Image (tube, rainbow, N blue to C red):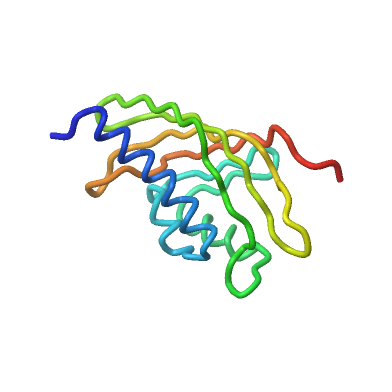
Length: 135
């Protein structure tokens, strides 16, 4: 049985795998990080519940050479483990490329996680868009 510290480390790795999979266009891998009924909640921008809804969300993304042209940087994770469920809060900064490189958003993730199929999965990942460039 893993210790709480090992579980926290596994959750932090899940959070990092989320960033690498999304930013590198490995979308099948990204979807599998969620439970079957997992929710990617973008607040007013919509909630995408279930793996098919997540795939539909991904099809709406503007891609260049198969990737979204951004990098997610997750920082300061605070993880609470309670048996086979957990919560996590973290900051996220999304850097966008293109003709100029700039910060697309600075915000927070609020995660609910569960152990499933031998690893941790997102049950819900809620995004808070705290700071965005003026449009």
